[in-house]
Image (cartoon, rainbow, N blue to C red; front, side, top):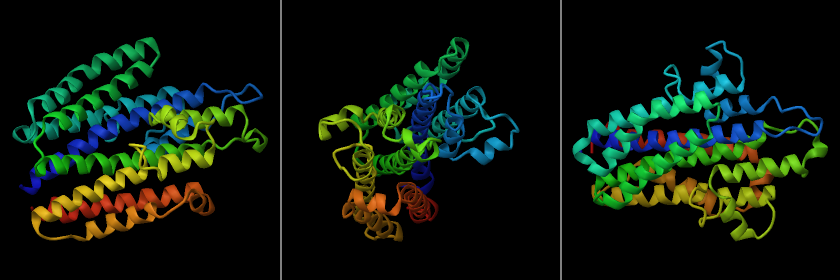
Length: 317
């Protein structure tokens, strides 16, 4: 396969996954903003934390706009000045799909194209109603439709594997960022930790990655920080956990290595990152510090993504 085709497929998947992930991050911000503290005041940090965890705070600050619900939602959701807005992600994914139209199925193309064509109307309706939650649900549904068409219609060849690779590199980054939201919304009064607000925030984190029902199935108890961290980081039963994403990445890279008859540095990098999760326990994560662990993971995952690009997408395949 030509490296240009592989590159388009890889980033097509990443941008569709990122659009959904941004919708999930915005959902966390909206839910957090609805929760007052015990004094009746609303937390001021949820919208800045949303920018931080989306990785676009410096870019937003360049606009000179106030950090509030309206501006942050617009910047993450619709702004053309933000190359990582949901709008920009869907546009880029659709452009990438058009560039490799012969490498994807008609069902995949229709899922991409229909999402792009319907986005403006859905955004306008959300803005007029001042309720963006239906829009965010729609984006998640459209992303699921794209993944369903990928899983159900695409031949298991190199095109499929590069598309899957992009999906899980992006998903790993997102799960870590959403879990790290809790760090950026530290309660001003430590006495509230373990209370109603704390419980609501942890439940919101689980809802954001569609994991609340799965959590109760596995642990049969109310959300606890150490269990949530274990579930979203170390449990392979959880489809969006960090370890599940790395398992899928290493498996896909092995398939590509066999097809090409050689292993690249990205294979060793993925294997080391997967092993660090495979043999970790929740106590290790909290001993290091949850925020520090997640920050380190995001950095290592980004380096892995860059190495995959260097090894497969730039040098030709």
